[in-house]
Image 1 (cartoon, protein in one colour):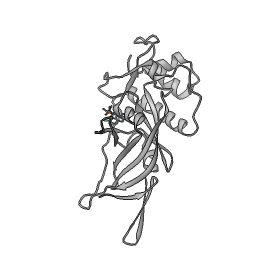
Image 2 (cartoon, rainbow, N blue to C red):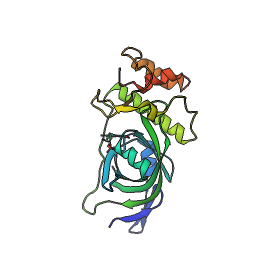
Image 3 (cartoon, rainbow, N blue to C red):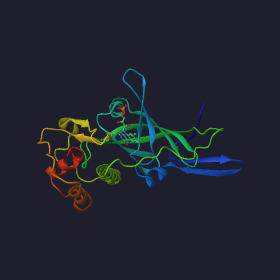
Image 4 (cartoon, rainbow, N blue to C red):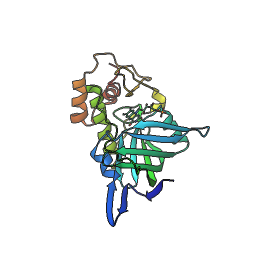
Length: 235
Ligand SMILES: Cc1cc2nc3c(=O)[nH]c(=O)nc-3n(C[C@H](O)[C@H](O)[C@H](O)COP(=O)(O)O)c2cc1C
C-alpha cells in the first residue's frame, strides 16, 4: 500500500540520511495549466470517475483551487460528495496522490461563466513512485489555438486573483441559470456558455478585442463584454 507522506503540499522524504523536499505548491504555481493530473472522484452509485485536469493553483500549502468545467462529472461529484484525489505525475520523479475534499467557491468565473472554481482542502498526500522507474516528465500540452491561449491566461489570472481574496462578482454570472455546454470547435474541451442573453454573433468580438479587454480592462468592462469573453470559442 502506498505510504502517506504528508498532510500538506510540501512533502519531505528522508532517504539514506538525506532529506528531499517536493514542493507541490511550487510545482503547480510555477507551471500554470501544465501540470496535467488525473482527478479521481466518486460517482453517485459509488463507482469511480477519473478525468485529466490542469488548472491547479495553490494559494497555500493546504489548498488547491481548480478551474473546472461546470458540466463535468467531476464537478457534479465534487458538489455532491466532495471527495477527490489528484494524481500528479511530473518530471523529477514527482509522483504523488493528493487526497482532499472539494467545494465550489465560485459557480461561474468572470472570464468564462461555464467554468467554476473548486477549492480542495488537502487531507493527505501519498507517495506513488516506482522502485523500478523514474518519472522523467509528465504529460505535456500546448494551447490548441490563440483563443485557447487567451482563455488559459484569463482563467489563470482569475484563479490567482480569486484565491487571494477575490474581486467582486459581476451580476448575472450564474452558470446554472445560463446553462453551458462544451465547445468542440477547436477540437478542445474549452467550455462556452449558452444562455438567456443573446448569443454573440461571429464578428461581435475579435481575439484582439478580447485579449486587450482581458489584460488591460481587468474586469472593468460590462456584463455584455463578459458575455463576449465567455463566448470566445463560439465566434
Ligand atoms: C490536458 C488536459 C487538461 C485538462 N484540464 C482541465 C481542467 O483543468 N479543468 C477541466 O474542467 N477540464 C479539463 N480537461 C478536460 C476534462 O478532462 C474533460 O472534459 C473530461 O472529459 C471531464 O470528465 P468528467 O466529465 O468525467 O469529469 C482537460 C483535458 C485535458 C486533455
